[in-house]
Length: 341
Image (cartoon, rainbow, N blue to C red):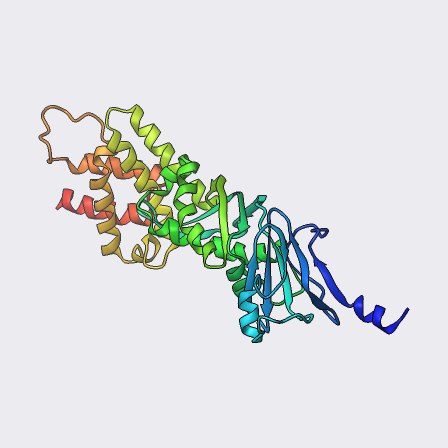
């Protein structure tokens, strides 16, 4: 083989990408020790874009089709290289191919619960899962912000970055929404629409177009779901009685006492003093009047409940485990003191 034949073989006459690698979004045409022949052919297939890059700067961009590479078809690169119109020599330039096909069936999820603000529950943590699809919409921006000068860039690599972006956007989107979480959870399409608009804007900053986004499931952590189930259960039980509010009040008091007993400054803390115990007992007895009261005798006016009745109800609270023995004893002593004088 002659030296002239060897040198000739170092010229690239056809540049193309067959997308042989599975899941590749960007691929740099091998250029080491090669030069592009002036007048060479660039083949860009459907769902591809080719980008010429000179020393890290994006120059000319080519869409699908067959292109003959000359100074007239490479205006930006020609300007960067200061070529004149008579340029006829081989040249070097990095050529990147980008796949613009829609990447379908991509899964997303929240491995850890995401904390969001909610108008009903104030602060809650949610988990959600679903599917989405995307594509490279702006190869220039994608090259600048994401893939850079690497020889190749895979779908898995970009999705590692998108995952964090999705979780942050979801938290901001739901937190800023005026739609209650329960409404969104009941209508997952509504939840997906709320997130999708903000997510599309976030993706666009990196040259990525969001094609589809859906929410397949949404849930609360186990402890929050249990609390919500209890709240729903209390509401259903209350609706069966004549006094709906009384049933819910009973549930609230029954739920709050164990919680207060676990917290410093709650029932366990303040119940140590006799005066505090009396105050709690009186407040509970008065607050539960509507929830536990039996029909009042006709002769007893409203608001003039006898001490005997209050003692009976106080005993009922103790039997149901709604107050401690110490609270019962201190409050009973105070009531008997008022009765005996």
